[in-house]
Image 1 (cartoon, rainbow, N blue to C red):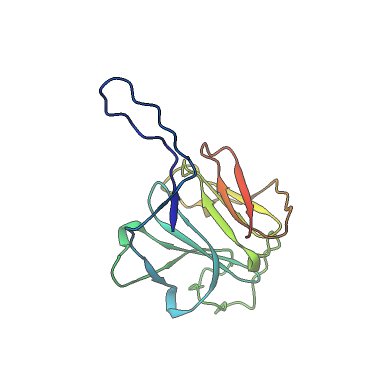
Image 2 (tube, helix red, strand yellow):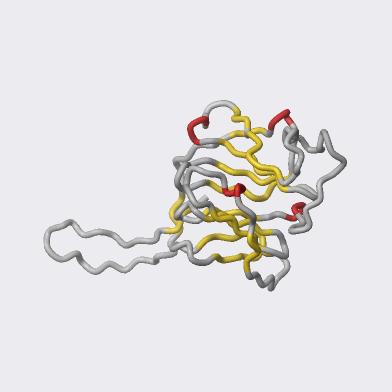
Length: 189
């Protein structure tokens, strides 16, 4: 893994700093990091391509891909362990049956229908730098949730569909702009 250096070098504080030339896109290897292991509730497995971290709380959100519903799991920062395996908790489900536990199949109903998105192809998620906005995308649409207060769930509000132009058919990543006023969508590869 590598990180892009985004700032120049500072001078020594003794007068003017000498002009230095550097490549702002120079890749710097990351050698000091920790791995976080997690599992879904009940030991089930899910297909997931969307993971994002709340910049305010440090909570990790994972969106599981299903054919007809959205399940979002959370690992709260305060509960995070770097040794061993963390168990995710079901944070939100678009299933209208509150008895669900977050396993692969609905235990109580015969299938949930949500016509807003094809959640089987949910491929990206990002929380804005301000912490107030969440965007998620499938191959055809971008959805936006806005929370009023930083201590509440995004899913207490309905999603709004944002303008989106899929130019390649393989857009599988998205990111907020630095000021939380726009977003970028990137093709795979």
